[in-house]
Length: 390
Figure 1 (tube, rainbow, N blue to C red):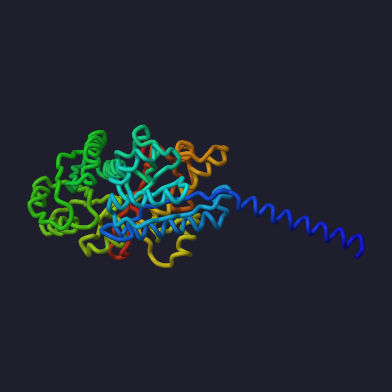
Figure 2 (spheres, rainbow, N blue to C red):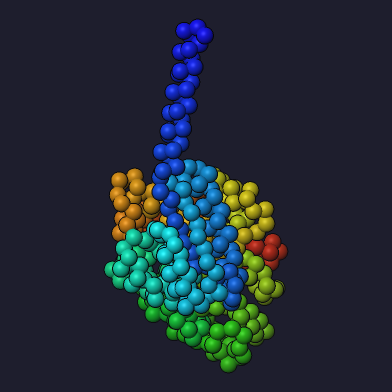
């Protein structure tokens, strides 16, 4: 073998060793575990399945792009059937088997129940399905992240849209007699007053399919320009609108996040035409220039994906970005450091998941857009620009 061939051989061997060594070092980076109490069965499974798919796809995209500063993101879900005791059991199982830094909770009740334990452990941040206003308090819930606006902020976005469209309008609020339903009532009343809107009509009902004829008569007497529904998914919203239309009312009806999924609104039938709702994200089918992440989602899933999918996807993006900020700063991955990384997020480009750059304020991302259901297109279409709350 000539000297030149020997040199090439040695150089190649050394390069191979270097590559192997580099790969070994990369693989030595500790996995970042994203645990999840996910309601894949039970009454909230319609959302849980979408949330699970959104998290799964976001994790794959993140890992395909090199992970989080070279760390692989590992998603570890457990089905909870939307029961608090099952969610707690899932949390205990996952955290006993893995070193968890990120977690997804399936409900407000679970988030409030497990928050003291997360604070005690001090090594993780939790996001989840809840937009509860109570959770948007960094002092009381220092390790919670809400992936969008709180329920109070959602009604605030709707009220800002109303004030711009019809100053001084009469607005009614119909909510379920549940913790979920009562959440934004006081905040909505305060915001309406600030915006010069008349919100004297507040109606509460049992959740689900109930006789609403008495409540519709109250709306008929008050004749509000707008009625906001909160604390429901579907029923009794169609019943309210059907009876109101039969009485000749021209009231515009609106909903918050969990009642504005396109497939859900479509189930209301013809009465849904013109229904308005607030959505923190673009819809799966939204048309927007420079939306590479939306394009990736559509390349991975060739059929419509729900609001819940977008929420799970956005939750994962933001938790990963907060973790990335902590790692870039050379900080240990504690709950406090990851949360600080989240709160550093300013004017973040989501690639079209949300149509404007987003910033974390408090525990949440107070941004959204009002959409209107177009029966001819069978789609929720934009009815406002993106609205960012202070």
